Image 1: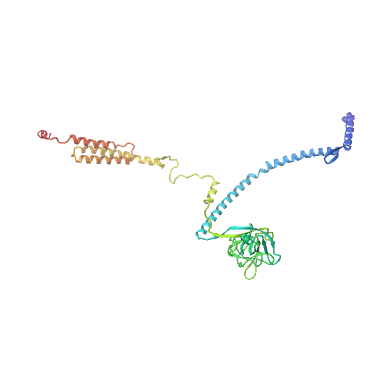
Image 2: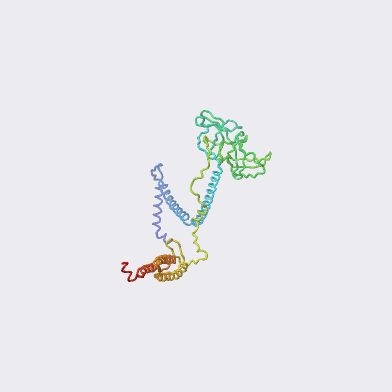
Length: 413
């Protein structure tokens, strides 16, 4: 109260000025794009907008901190999980590709042929039959476009039917949900074969499957190729309901893969060529190779019975020889050296022999000593002494020849 009593004049003046400003703001109008607007409204909007702008930026900053930092605690675990799933998918893909290549090789080995789609013609649906009991389509392509009767009609999702009649610029297609249609079909998992036919209400059923067979809802159905119209392996649909019918057969209702009630464009297969499957391609990638890329390296163990700490010597040929083997071979060379020296000494007494025997014994002694020294692989080879021993007998044979008598020497000379 003391503060207010001391400054009551100032407070009263400020209050009066504020009331006057508010009164002026209510009365004064400012021209804007939308028209004249009171000044008090503009001031109020600007004030509240500034406060809301600050709150908005503050909220975005808090959310950014939570999203970029605090909420990333589980990202590492999720990355590890995704990496493990990716590795499993790579392994499964490698196995599937190898099995596919093996199947192609078996087909090629057995000389099996398959019908491959070579040429298709795109056509547009221009009309349907006006009867509930028949399911027909009319296309804007005919004989002038290469379309003939009994040609299969498909979509990227599944089969539609076959060409029933052809005219100049139009063609009539019998759909698979017509009661008079028939398509050879096969269950993907159980490999059971039957015939797909339509019902009067526009449904699709699989006929002639025995009641003792096991067929589960959700199993896919493809063409079997037995009708000689559709190539083998085209999708037909999936099993929606299975029940036991009459005549020991199952009543199997199907859901078509193609949307037969919403067809606008279709493809007509105009040409099929049977040929063997192509087994050429890149080299197979084994699942073990993919797994090895994600595993750490494994050290190579030491040989069985060997010492890992034993140093190894590399010979000029590139082979590794243990030190023990080299030391074991060394004593043999020391034993072989005296034998070669003894052979050289025994060759010296051969000098007094006759001239014919000396040349024979000396060359024989030298070659025998040399191979022994070379085969022993001793560090000191004594083989050079052998030729010297062989040379001395030759010199001795010239000097020690028996001289003729003095009387005869003059005659001979």
